[in-house]
Length: 61
Image (cartoon, rainbow, N blue to C red; front, side):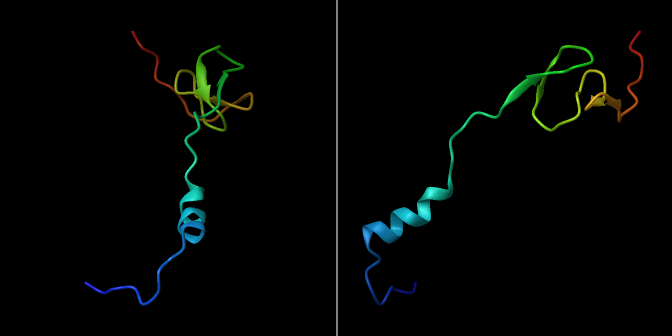
């Protein structure tokens, strides 16, 4: 395995590790059916996004 020629400082190492963000995704309520939906996603229950039908859902019997 290759060995580094110079030691990487703690500051430089930590800068590289800052891009990870442990945050919970934003959940909103669907404006059409009221189901919880991830932000900027089509509702999996009714198929609506921003008040428009984007995916036709089959009627469940």
